[in-house]
Length: 273
Ligand SMILES: NC(=O)c1ccc[n+]([C@@H]2O[C@H](COP(=O)([O-])OP(=O)(O)OC[C@H]3O[C@@H](n4cnc5c(N)ncnc54)[C@H](OP(=O)(O)O)[C@@H]3O)[C@@H](O)[C@H]2O)c1
Image (tube, rainbow, N blue to C red; front, top):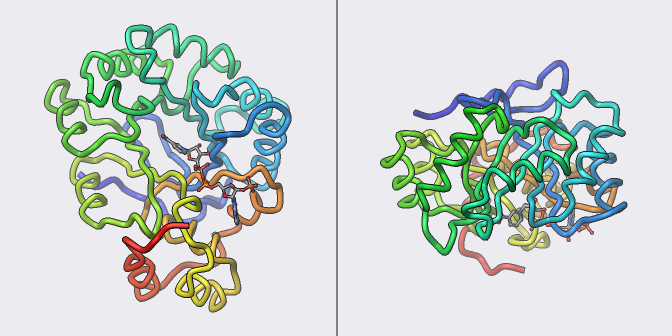
């Protein structure tokens, strides 16, 4: 079943969200926090919340959950208005519950909005771990649960074994990686596609992006973020630079035409930076 995407700006936050079956509304734009720790991470998350982000992506492996939690508390933005994702390291198989407890302690929160398996443990879908995530959801420790870096066949394994589809699959995504069949496969299963590394996988000087950006009076990076939104794909650009954090979120004043989306889609397979 395709999920409904609310593309109308929300009066409270002015940003589009995707509805999760459990877990409420997931903002389509979030802040990535990989490779940011300590004060750098705190400052970045604070900057993001100040300019309106309400979605932060962290992971046990990023070793910054404490900083993320502190930045949210210090921001004054109510916890319930911020969508927090963290991820189970595949090495923590067998210790799922304890690992989530540690994440929650570090974050200083009683639940996360989304808990993901960071990547398939030893390359396998691993139903037993998926059942642990579902149990954590049932206990209210994670509003929604999902996976990351799973292939479609692995999603199907989890669905066949438990009847419960991951709510989200977080995978590398960018114009150069665009694949309409991957989008369709996720939609058919009711799994929200969340993209990561939107810029690392993009040549931001590509003439197609430059031309479309000039037409809208924005930057190629903003076009890349908007391209995700217009495809209803969640995007979590990372930046440690307050100006870039703000610019990456300043994408709600324009949208791409179908012709522009098509031209960007056709960058699929182009050489990466
Ligand atoms: N599930 C997984 O396995 C997985 C894997 C990778 C990433 N992720 C998640 O996805 C997030 C995003 O991916 P990522 O961190 O790999 O890479 P990314 O967001 O594609 O790129 C980050 C890089 O782009 C730069 N940048 C940011 N805004 C820019 C702009 N407007 N113009 C030009 N450059 C800009 C950043 O520099 P500055 O910081 O210096 O501004 C940084 O060097 C991660 O932080 C993490 O939360 C998940």
